[in-house]
Image (cartoon, rainbow, N blue to C red; front, side):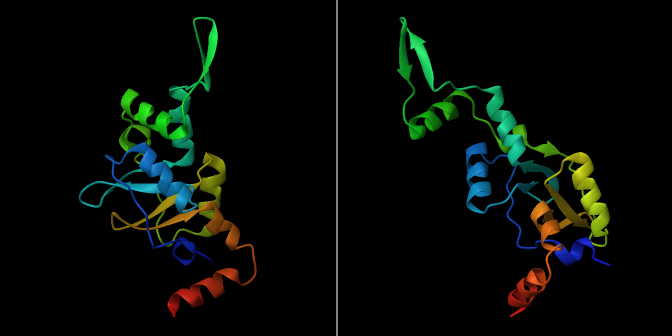
Length: 161
């Protein structure tokens, strides 16, 4: 029987509620992950930030690629300049974008239960908590790996060396 402990990642990347959304987005993209736990100063899990949380935040502040001025069309500036302007317009932090009090699983939660939670609630990432402390994280990719013969075992053996 496979449980959360068997498939969770323990090399955790996390952010704080004060982290800027742009920095969090970079982390997600650089590490190719769908979500990241949000920890307070004492290391307590206070939320989770997923790619979908960031997409929703962008929807709230639509930025057109063109705008009209005196009956003419003017293109917005470079992406770097747009990033600076967005920061000035709205200093969005992880606290404003995250899902607070996320659903969690324990290390002995069966993989079937984890999969059910993900599918039924459209979760992409689930924190694994033991005795109130974050010990791991499970993404949909971790569930998918269990369908393949061998790769997870090879990966675990490589990590153990």
